[in-house]
Image 1: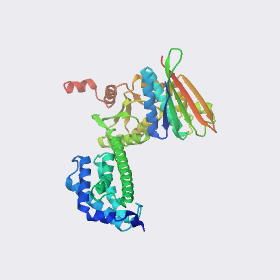
Image 2 (image 1 turned 30 degrees about the horizontal axis):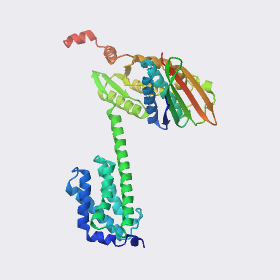
Image 3 (image 1 turned 120 degrees about the vertical axis):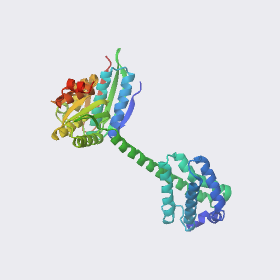
Image 4 (image 1 turned 90 degrees about the horizontal axis):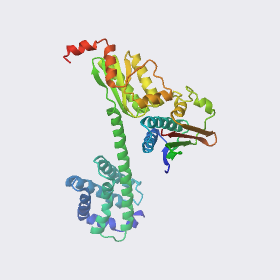
Length: 279
Length: 132
């Protein structure tokens, strides 16, 4: 019988449940240093202890995947996810589980059955760690996606002129976001000129160039004219050596030059416009 | 100088290779233009390693000739190899969906360029850029 290896430790834990819980909460609270309210922590640990003792009593054995442990696993998943999202460290999260061992030793004692129970708690700790890591990975993936959106603002510079300042690397995923945002902004603002500024792009290789050209072709199909600006000397030399040709696409060294070109192309006499605005 | 290795297994690794090459190029006192050229060449070759070679590694190392410092980057993969190197170096030829300028372009961007390719062993490309 699987339950036998635990001796009467489960019964003794039940008998001492309140003091055991108190000791456990004390140890955990110490490591969390007041970042969770006592009531919250109390509820979490109480539910977990209750579920664990029930699972052990119904013959859960040492296999955490066994049916009696379903509730324990569910509670641990919730606990670990919450800790990960709240920014607790893996150590602080795992300590919550491992502290139960110390609590049992302090209140119930480390007699027969404790070793087996200790093994179960070790497994629970590892499970916590696994879930925590997964939750953190989800957080990171979400942030990467958000960054993708954030890093591609399309700004209106002048009536009918929008600019897309690119920063960092332009991989396929970002290029897709960039293209979609630019095309949508062209529609929304009814602009006929778009300036793609690559001052912040550290290296222009053939993949970046290809993405740029595709974006420009797409914008042209929608009737908008594109200008590439922010081509620094070293980038210009690299583009030449690579053999990339931008064809009849206008390119400028600075965003200011590109804006001047876009404005004059839209038929504004720059001198008159400046005078009119009192500049 | 010991060589620094970077595995190439995904798109993010291409960026890492680029950053590593830039760091070493700065340390070797390459001019801004030469840094950019080498970084761009490394970017092309790392992507080739990933796409055509099915992944591999890049090894970046600072080297010295008689008086000049330089940077050597070695790309290794265990892919199918390049059947016709001369054809692969031709501008506009591509076996994928790119522009067909990467390999030839990378060769023009560096000072020394060496390809060893064998269907059984994969491809090794060694490039060196010297400071002027």
